[in-house]
Amino acid sequence: MPTTRRQFLSIAGGVAAAGSIPIVTLRPLEATPAMLTTAIRNVVGEAPVRTGKVKLDIPPLVENGNTVPMTVSVASPMTADDYVKSIHVFNEKNPQPNVGNFHLGPSSGRAQISTRIRLADTQKVVAIARLSDDTFWQVTAEIVVTLAACTEEMN
Amino acid sequence: MAALINVPAKAKRGDIIEIRTLTSHIMETGFRHTADGALVPRDIITSFTCRYNGTEVFRADLFPAIAANPYLSFFTVAKESGKFEFEWIGDNGYSSSASASITVE
Amino acid sequence: MIFWRAIAAATLLAAAPALLAGEIPPDARRSGYSFMGPDTRAMQDDDTSNPGMLFVLDGETLWGKKTGSAEKACADCHGDARSSMKGVAARYPAFDKALTRPVTLDQRINLCRSNHQQATPLPYESRDLLALSAFIAHQSRGVAITTGDDPELKPFVAQGRDLFTQREGQLNLACTNCHDDNYSKHLAGAPVTQGQPTGYPLYRLEWQTLGSLERRLRSCMSGVRAQAYDYGAPELVALELYLMSRARGLQMETPAVRP
Image (cartoon, rainbow over all chains, first blue to last red; front, side, top):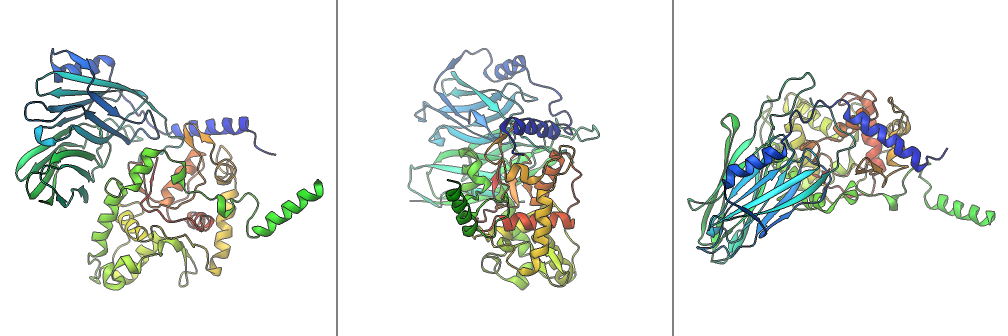
């Protein structure tokens, strides 16, 4: 009997469910939007955070949330009196809201960093840059994380 | 365990060069449980520093949301021939280092 | 019409006489690489950003390190791996005349350890075993897979194929149901690949580490809720052998990166 598309999809759903059963709670606690706000306030204090200057390159749909490539760049001449001091990356829903702080200076030449991050679920990622005049600039991206179809029990 | 460092061997004075580092580390988040319910303790790299002839040119604070085997790419201006030194520091007294040379013409 | 169709079918059969029903013809065989997105491909393509290369580097160190009571390193017998190991992984699992059965590359490393280095075998999935097999298999990167050429392997390839097509587990699925009949479709958000083992041991983003083909097979078995065979079990070796012979002609990619 040929497998129809509908049948295959239902089989597929079964496998996905089976794969996820042995996994123990992956997210015992979740950062909340309030925790995200607090984490950001810890870095920027009471200073206003404006939108712009910062660019966040991250795939909108990631293949596996365990290793997501990410690049943050900031439009800055990177001269002795106009440069980026630091870049701070936050997420909304991982167990905790901080991802990384990256400290640069005029000798960086280019205000750009890349790394690989973990995203436990579909969520918002925020990148904030602190410039040499102590102004803060941000960008936000929504990332869709597809969960792996077959996962393993932790051993 | 190994680390992969990518620094151009040669550069012209004033060139903006990219430095890439990849190092072996599990980056255990401290949020996972084993099948019998025990919490797996956190074990991550918390700090990375790059020095260029002794002067810090880049530093990063890392959190559990950084993927296993941390990868970092950043830039610096080639000023003089010499050495880049890299240092990773983490939980449970973890520390590792690597270096790479550059010739600036 | 019917007559012409019969001729067309006959031509197809004549062109691919070795293919069994349901098998993917050689020109349609695709590495898992071709199913990945651009970001994961980029991670594999650049050796300085491919985390699998960390294991290859560790393996290179182990290759030259004296071990066991014989105080011998791999390099003491095999010399420079770049020439001596080129193409080796592309023909594994291979038939071992003394054992009269196929052995995987991991098993060959451990046979070398016990027979020639007088060292204890490395546990399956241990960092050292993965590092050594990654280093050895990396020497075959770009080499076309030829596993299964040895006529003595024939019954074991057949055993592997039987296992591949045999339904198992509570979901009652065979490997072939997904990887021959439904590749390119999606399972949840992930594309179903052909299951061509071109890049093992490989760095799986899901694992966040390097892993063997046996680990991947065991993971699939848990996925269909079957009892997974133990590491090194003859059934897993036969499956690995069949899968490698099924990927004949595809190029080795070790260390590959997969989602």
